[in-house]
Structure formats: C-alpha cells, structure tokens
Amino acid sequence: MTRYYAIVVTDDAKGEKTMTQQLTGTSATEALEPLRISAVTLLTTYRKDGQGVGTPVGINVQAEKAFFTTRSKTWKVKRMNRNQNVTVAPCTKTGKVLGDTVPAVVRRVSEEELRAHQSNFQYKLWRVVYRIIYRDLPVTYEITPVA
Image (cartoon, rainbow, N blue to C red; front, side, top):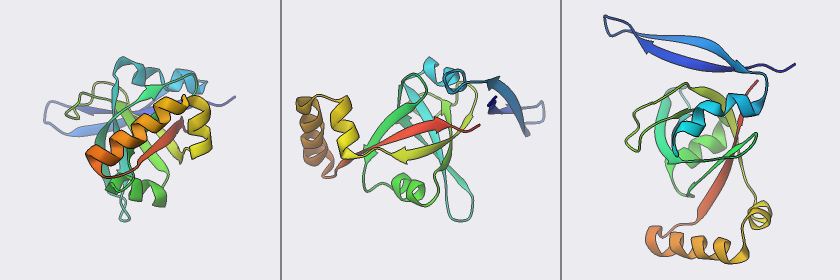
C-alpha cells in the first residue's frame, strides 16, 4: 500500500519554522485533497544549488492528478526540465500558503494529450491568446503526488 505524506511548515512563538511530515492518505486523490481548497497553488521548484523557488500558479485538480499551464520561457519551466521534483501547497494569488504542502513530481503534457482533453477550438484559442498577450507559447504540466 502506498502512503502519501505532506510537509507541514509551522512557526513557533520565536518565529522559527519547523518542518514535519503528516500522513495525508493512501491514495493520490487523498494526497491532493489540500489543493482543492484554492484555485491557486504555490509551486516550489528547485534551482541547481537545491534552493527552492515558490511561484503561485493556477491549478486544475482532477481525480489523481493536477494540471497547470504556464508560459514556455519562464524560469520555472527551465528548473522543472532539470528537476521534476516539486512541492505544491494551496495559496492566495500573492503566494500566502493556506494549507499543507504536498511533495510531487511534474511531467510536461504533450500536445496530443492536450488535444484529447480540450476541444480543438479551446486549444487553438488559448494558443492564440498566449501568442498575442504573452508573445510566448503555453505549456501544460501534470502534477502527481509522490509516495
């Protein structure tokens, strides 16, 4: 049986942070439960030196996986291409964490998979929006909790 854990960061009276692990469940669906309280999650990716960089991203949580879309030229994409291990936590749009942190791995979703999940019109519309507004291409990543 696979068990999923969340990393919980708490502040004590002196302002020092303490990290602990809590069992979140035995399925990926239960592990992603903390992310369902917010449409935004704090995605923490890691630099070459191991330092974490948190970025708020919009998220779509489905049964055992979660998805987010970002621009292809961002630094987080470059960090995720190098290291697929991330942590995710529900947060506000400004990045204030609202719940438990869940360790996960990310995988870039292929164009064929995107077309299978989205209508052709929706897929083409968002590609045009990203090209016009951001002058970039959208990339979608799949988040899977780590056992």
